[in-house]
Image (cartoon, rainbow, N blue to C red; front, top):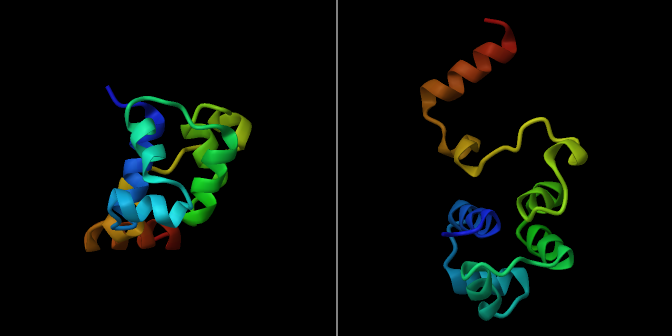
Length: 104
């Protein structure tokens, strides 16, 4: 069973359209680190932060996904899942959200 952290890593990798090797390079880590995470090894807080920053992700979300802090401690009402990013929404979903925000 994959850890919550590794599932986060995979979501980031897919969102950025990177291979595992490309993800490791971009994060400034050896590919073996990703393999260790895949096998269930938890990241250190420093590694989680490094990963998030290198991939232009929210550091607080990374710390929540790594289990260092809760979403409440991070001040995150809802952890936005990568599946919900705008790039992945259909046109009707985008228009619905625009209408909701505009009060239409």
